[in-house]
Every structure is written in C-alpha cells, then in structure tokens.
Length: 127
Image 1 (cartoon, rainbow, N blue to C red):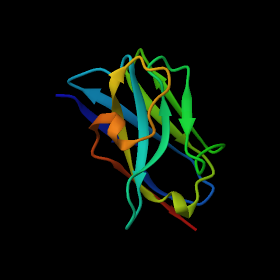
Image 2 (cartoon, rainbow, N blue to C red):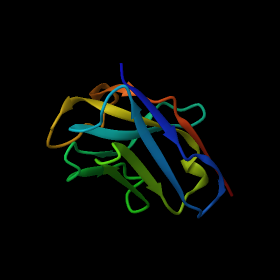
Image 3 (tube, helix red, strand yellow):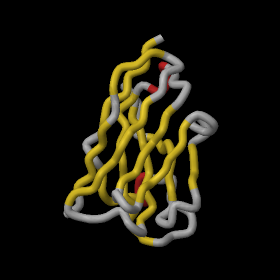
C-alpha cells in the first residue's frame, strides 16, 4: 500500500554531514510516528531516531544523540535525518519507517512498532 523512498546517502569523509530524506508514495505520514533505523555490515538493524506524529517528541539512540536530528515537514509530507559529525561507525544502510499506530505520544524504538519500510539509502563514512 504505502511505499517509502529514502534519498540523500553517499560517500563522505569523517566529520562531514549528510541530510537524508524520506518521502511517501500511495499514503501519508501525517499522524504517524516516523523513525530511522540503520543496518551496518554484518549487524542487525538498529534504531537511530524517531519523531512523533505531531512532531513534538523525538527520540535518539545514544550513538546518535547530539549529532543527529530528526524532523518532519507536514506540508511536504516528508521526514528528514540530519547527520553531523559523521564517523566511520555510522556506515550503514539507513531505512525510513512508518509506525503502525497514529497519534501516539511517544514513538516506538522497536522494529515491531513499524509496518512500512523504505528500501534504504547507503551511507559510507571514510576515515
């Protein structure tokens, strides 16, 4: 039903910045908590950041706190992940996901809380 498309990934050097974007097709993000997950080589998919349906609450993984910010634009129906001070450890495929429930106060940090996923965008950080 709903397809999510990520963009903005690339190959950058350490300390550089990237801004990832997520757009919806065949549906809407309005009212749904949105999140970014990532999966590095040989690792399981892990939570990075999430924003509530209203956009008033955000959550970050400890590794992302202070460096990454998540935001949403209701007019454009898009979600963004601004990544600053990138490290080689940030190298991974980054996925955008839409929550199963609408208008929750606190977004989920678990994979099971999200039902629609994008194909991912590759982020590679060199030293």
